[in-house]
Amino acid sequence: MISVEEALERILGLVEVLEKEEKPILDCLGQVLGEDAYASFDVPPYDNSAMDGYALQSASTVGATAESPSILRVIGEIAAGHVSTLSVEAGTAVRIMTGAPMPKGADAVVPFELTDEVERRHAGRHGKQVGIRCSVGIGANVRYAGEDIKRNGLVMRRGKLLRPAAIGVLASLGKASAVVIRRPVIGILATGDEVLDISQPLPPGKIYNSNSYSLACQVRSSGGIPKLLGVAPDRAEQLSAALRCGLDCDMLITSGGVSLGDYDVVKDVLAAEGDVSFWTVRMKPGKPIAFGVFERKGEKKVPHLGLPGNPVSSMVTFEIFARPAIRKMMGMVDFSRRYVTAIMEGSIRNADGRRVFARVTVSKKGGQYFAKLTGSQGSGVLTSMLEADGLAVIPETVVAVEPSDLVEVMMLDWNEVDGF
Ligand code: AMP
Ligand code: MG
Image (cartoon, rainbow, N blue to C red; front, side, top):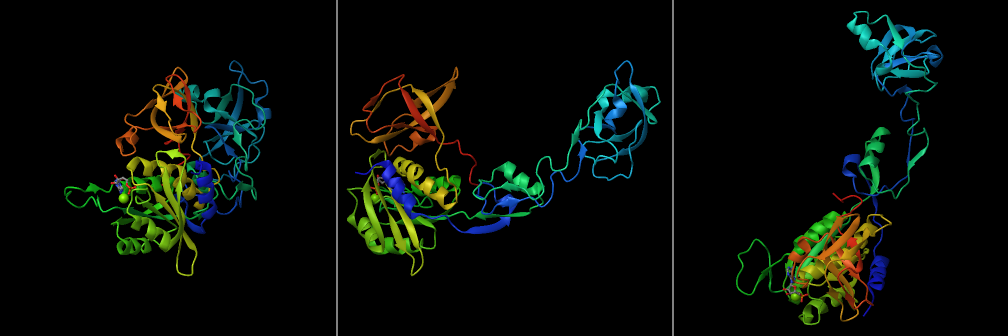
């Protein structure tokens, strides 16, 4: 038996970061930047007003109060999006809107609320003059050019995961497209004579193929592009043919056919077609997995991950091994999920020294997290994954967890950003 870490290390050792692609920024959400991004101009590009108010010289407001306002002559107005030739001098002001370029000579803005504009309007004396009711310093309510991003500055390093704000920053720099690491295409093949596609009526002795669908969605939410390769029966020729259909993918994931009781043919084919080894991993669920590479005629090798057939085992082993592999291919460096420490509300037995991944709901009460088993933990009980917010990770050395013991829970839905 090998440890979870050892298995993961071997898997990550065989997958590589994929090539770059350039595409419109809106399509880059959740991908990793492939090149450093520099600013070719200041953001904001010009000094502008942070408020609707009056642009003026701060010196014109010295000593101004509500009782004794500084009365300034209003020489015009500037709306956002318009450049003005107005020039502010001592004793004058320009009415200015948020985002409008600062007029020449002005060094501060006083917002409307701190002027007598409203009263003048009511009195019908609006327009020619304004009373400023406070004194302001140089730079008050002014946003300077380059305040957000400096011209020629490094804005984002390659390797950065593009979240919504990053896409917005690229847009603020006028970049319509970005160079990112492309998403991996992951071929998904179910195996088993008893496994039937969901388009068919269900005869006795058969079950529907659920694994391909849960795995495809896990691929998608990890950032990859799933390619469903159907269901292969436990027969050598058909299995080989189905596998070959997946050799143009960046990684192949199969489910089923790797446990001890399986028809040897599945293992034989995997071993014959590729350089695949079978591991017993010290974990529960999901002990048996296969891993290796398939040769793509003379080209680079396609990594293959053979997950167990039991629906929960296939999802949990995907989470532990396939998700990090996909994220590595996408150029990410931090593959780990977020963990919370929670008080266990039930008991868990760990009889055979494996690492247990128990499906739990997580709630927060009084500043403390609580974890509760989602019900039957059988590896065939897919509904135990339905309500799971996370996987409580019980170390190999812990034989039992009792109510109110602390457990570490790997949260399943706390992605930094979904891969869509
Ligand atoms: P195996 O790993 O092939 O021995 O399969 C273990 C269990 O998982 C068996 O009960 C299979 O019927 C079931 N199983 C295998 N593949 C699938 C699948 N694609 N969808 C749902 N259940 C499956
Ligand atoms: Mg099988």
